[in-house]
Length: 167
Image (cartoon, rainbow, N blue to C red; front, side, top):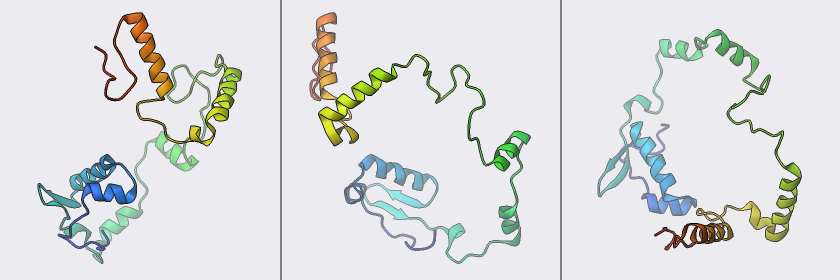
């Protein structure tokens, strides 16, 4: 929007950009798709992605006086919205209610068992426990589930990537 990349300039290929940023190609594709849907880039099959011509966002373009006034006005809010806006947002829940989103039921949670297992995992795995794991899940857990399904259901399941389908 500030004109750092001129209209028509090519963007890096998604694979190359993903590799240089150390992110998934899906992440780059998602960003490119968002930019395309908002009109910031053009995509051409076989040619790649290019910066779009953006007359509405040309650098140095002055906004009209009406646009500047509208940007400085407070939004029209309901009474509840105004209370939240003026109060700085929702900071706490007044009373916990059943089935409230994001609030777990903690009265019967086995906290001592959780702490013991957490200490054991940290002891066994060290700092590896803090890293991202295998996207398929922990290998010992996959193996245990496959063994259970094989024994209890007579399936032929395996815990590996290539043979994880049950037959």
